[in-house]
Length: 135
Image 1 (cartoon, rainbow, N blue to C red):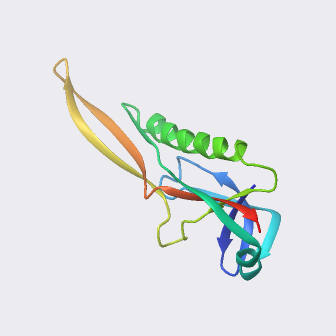
Image 2: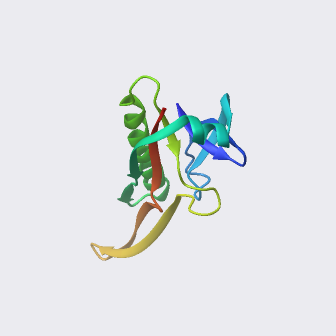
Image 3: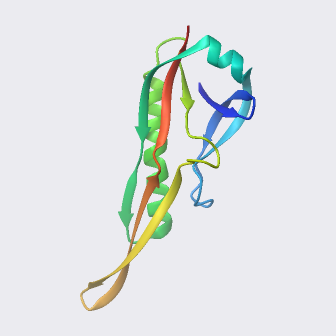
């Protein structure tokens, strides 16, 4: 399970990584769990932390955007699979403050006397994920 704070509540979420949005690395509340923030902070403890980032490079912008988000999603799923019974992942990035976003750059390179674009995408700042467990 993945948890994230929304105002005065901590809710369960599902990744919503969409390259068409091209800005924030998004999550959607799934309605399975909703806990008051004070109750969550009193009843759960942080046992580990991870910073997830990804990067991709290529000649097709859409493919590069998809690749960077797929890499981030794969890392998140690996963390989920490694959780012990009762543990959860908690997204530590605050909405609007240090929200992870896809950052893109394009360069022009000359290949066999033709100009070609090369796209590079990264996730910045990193997606900060904590492993939490009940106290």
